[in-house]
Image (cartoon, rainbow, N blue to C red; front, top):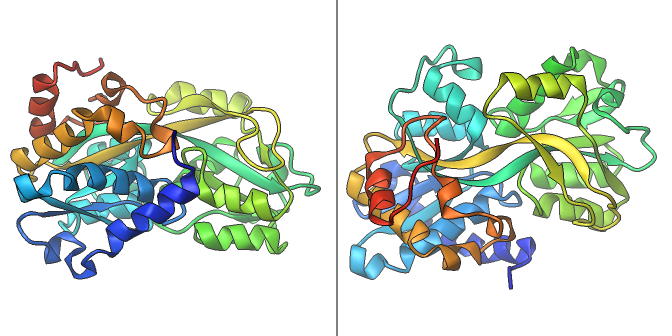
Length: 328
């Protein structure tokens, strides 16, 4: 039986707290790798913990140890990979594409030619959560409302920027904004300090469960011509339906669009290390899939895709040895 997401997040907290002095590439030994994730109540943190769990099962034989690091999210993770302070990171698929090509928020950085994909993970819908009675039944109803738009440097924040632009809105149209973490935004919406929050996340998500369990909220559809155009013009987006009844007080399915979570590294990471990690996860996939609810619908062959950035040579060798084929 799959773990409840809250149990999974708590279980993997220990992974990041073991030998904290080792966290980060600059402090790690030769046999240590650090995976940048996100906030501890999101899915990236337990997802990174699940990957490390698989790697660390073989650590005595391979002398490879894996640690997770909580971070501000996708944009920060990409830049940490680029400056060498992380070995691996979990990043939204759209920001993998933009970082590799040097577009969008990475235009001033230039193309990140050394960025490499290891494998893809779960889908992540752009999720709009509003207090019941706030009058928010669609994205454009955020006008005049106070909204948490996410931490600077997070994929959540950058995706919100994209959606605002798609709807022809700027932040002045809102009734105010906050830049709170997952935990902070959950408290703020229940305390009436904000009317809504946005979150690009796999489901079920602990931060949304916390909100739904403590106050009356609803998930809001994010759809229509603006989203149709956004998805049609960007191959890294896809339309997504968030199942109903995942959270307390929520009912029918909600329509939105989304990205995928992607484990990435750099071309400088040794092929043997990437091969070992990939083999530990994809080669024992049934065990891995049991570590988190969001992995239950994954299939190994669907996790291999090179349309965002090249696949690392170490991952390719592991994929070939396992008899898997990258998707076109």
